Length: 415
Ligand SMILES: [Zn+2]
Image (cartoon, rainbow, N blue to C red; front, side, top):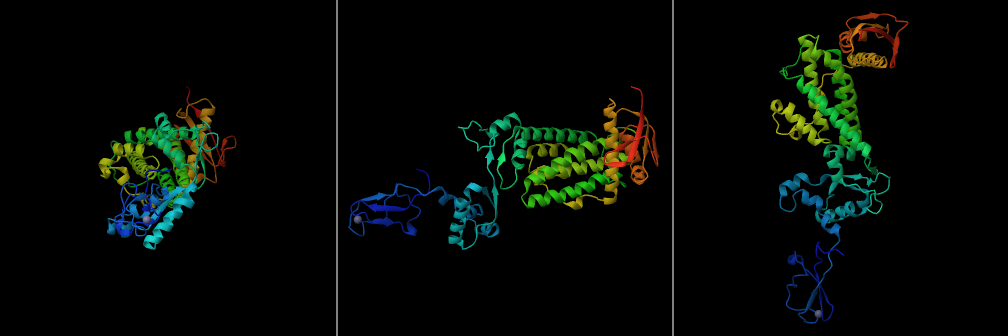
């Protein structure tokens, strides 16, 4: 039995049981507290009335949501702009109640549909896959997750469910989200620390891996924007995390360190700084809906002064045209990145650190000669090779997984 809700505006005559329904001009009225504004029962003349004590069900109140959030009834101008609503988000458990009552009430009042799209989300299930219930003991409070990890980690977990499907709570997913935030934080610190002498001017020439990254980033902007528009939030988040973790951190950041720290020309360093700041700013804006706090923090540390907006959440959504692109160089960059990764893995397999200096590095390939030559400086710098020898064919070399035609071998400096 509900107590606080929209009253049912009806009274009963205590003498003859006549039902007195409120006239529209009497409303709003609460029959539990107010008498009907009539002198006596029109049927028997009694002055003794009993007000209805029941209240309407919850959907009577919420059936007006779309109009109210659009400013109705006070702000006619706002209402004309915001009605009907673009989006009505709710769980599948209230389709036949909320979504339905909204349609009924708004069609009755305005003769127009209340919302253009209903977004149906699934339910959260416990770690055991069952619905969360106190009696099952599988109940986890959001507060506990926020205290153990943080809101940005919980939010990523929530965004990782597919629209319309139930989502299971898993601590592993929150933990992964947390480690992703640490990765993003460390990468941002590296970018900030290495761009203090950079004035944001555009360099005259970008190198192969700069264009490789920007071309992939341009595609990421398109993918994430499309996924967000189609409300496939989990796909947007997946693409973003894969890009940041693997393309940006594992490959690009590692491959530009030598240009930032040592043995590099000013032009090459500036091109790396340009690409790093541009990429990070785009990444932060794409991530802002999923990780609003950490992206805001990094924005304030790295971009606010230059950009001017008070908050990252007031900046504009990235557009593909912000990124330079060159698909031919992207393909060549893929070869360079795979070769660098193969050399670094082989170093580790030989119990050398990835940064251990090499006296000489041989790379053999006829098919990908062009790519190797164009990325020679990056390969040499990132693999810490004092000398790089590129040949047509290297019979006794180790093959690069993704491009087995490319073979390499090296001689490491003594430890
Ligand atoms: Zn009566």
